[in-house]
Length: 192
Image (cartoon, rainbow, N blue to C red; front, side, top):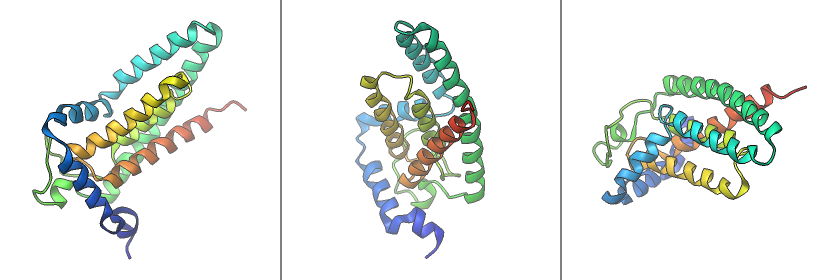
């Protein structure tokens, strides 16, 4: 059994889950899938991060103005370092592994929403970035809103499969990389 068969193919489940999600997405959800992909991308994400950081800072500033700015600044530094780690890990893995996208692997059996992507399926950069954003924002967001961060992660992961860009294994690997990068950034910037 090869590495790919064990950790990527999952004895056929990776393709089966992809097909179940991709083919079950109705036409009326296509715009929602495209928006989820955009918000989870490295390019669309900074706008979301900026808005959520500002919003979190405003909520914290009302109760503890002297500590909220420090907390936001610390999380922003962690995000910047985590972003560098995430980008580097995803870029290197994409180049080293070079797994094809579903549209190439499944030869026309994929429902594509938007522009088709052909190369570098593993890992999902969108999933990695969205996990980094969620982990960074987690301590800044009030507990009652943390479910929204989790829902956003699910939305981004679902959207990448729904638009035909990634297999579930790509999404899970991206989430893992984003979470680990956030953890490394947190550990690296801890005060002695």
